[in-house]
Length: 387
Image (cartoon, rainbow, N blue to C red):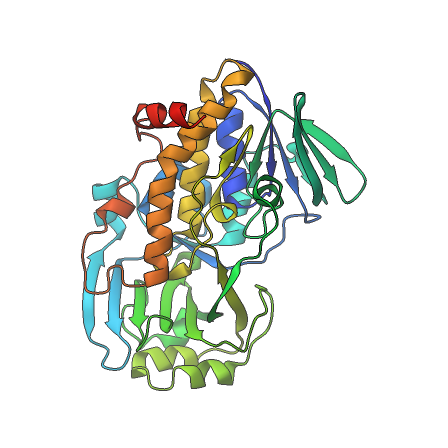
């Protein structure tokens, strides 16, 4: 196997997962991150068994579980009557069935767990890409601070506003969905009378845009609340903007007493607009490719955004692991794309429709996926034809 210099734009969950997996495969990896340091911002994350199993393959089981909670069930309830329409056992049952449990964790804690095993000196902070060009001698990145670098392979893990995606396909803008999201965290003891606090519970609203999701955090000491509703008037895309607690409560005034009790316990709330893109027909070009939100940003209704980025990263690293000649890189990236495109597109579309597991159903096709063992050969013929 040849040793290539692989650049990853974006030190998010997908980018760092890919960095660890690629470095373990023997490649030289550099991560470029526009922030000046890792910041404790962003949403709390639901890691379903498919994502946890992929992370466990990196050898970070203990670090990931250090602050995470372990939901007992995945429960669906009807917004007004409170009727339970589906209940899926998680915890030990999921671990026995899928090889890993469901874990709920703050994004910053997951990033810290990943950063523990990836060398800090290989993360270049304060690097915002302003120009990316691919030539015969590799891919050149020029940054807003005046510096530049050259890599053999470039991976865009830089989110919904990806500079790598723009370099590959031209400038475009993600689409506002007309939906806003509220986020809050409350102590579990404050709502002790609400049932199923240690479960992942989804309150299905009167329309596809309206829902309340709750799950435990910090080993069950806190409860995370994520609520969405249609609102065309709010377009601000930020995970740190303060919202109105009264607006949160008013937006779900008709919901069941248990749901409203959770909102009544909120002291503060954050608010953001939700954006998405349509599935791409392809996301690899030359020696560049995309992963996570850079390639398939999706609505949060299947809770698979982080999971898909993690799966992408593992499969991508496996596709590049045995490449022995730089001329074979485009074919390896096409294999990665062929393996991931159908699954991520299906989940993108399903997340938009927001009906998965409402009345029960099969979770195996999502939770049972193993990024470490999916056969690479299944995509080789398709990928070869596409190069």
